[in-house]
Image (tube, rainbow, N blue to C red; front, side):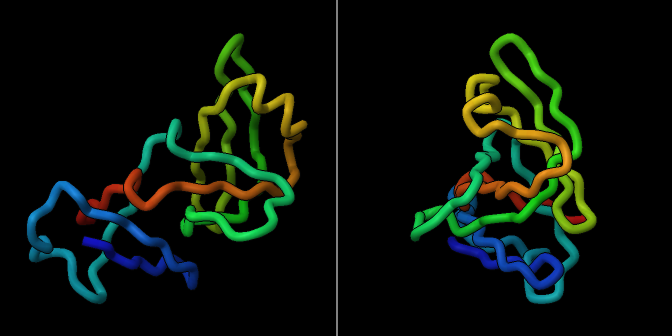
Length: 116
């Protein structure tokens, strides 16, 4: 089942594959949370063209915690704080810096919905 969720004017697509039928709490106007792992958040700079990932968020880099192999990037998306865990090599390749705008992307099948 493919569900569209509006968050402050931005539409997110969520693919619910673990549910044979729509949960009773999931209906128009419901107050729900989108949940995804930080390892499922991809980052892009100067992304052009069409891609299959519809869930795209323009974010501002708040913090970069560099590790030997993985780094955690804390992002501000509208009034939400999200995180991305990517390789430190990718951080260097993207030349990420605190304060810059970047795009965060999450595949529809990597998002879960929770009732608030």
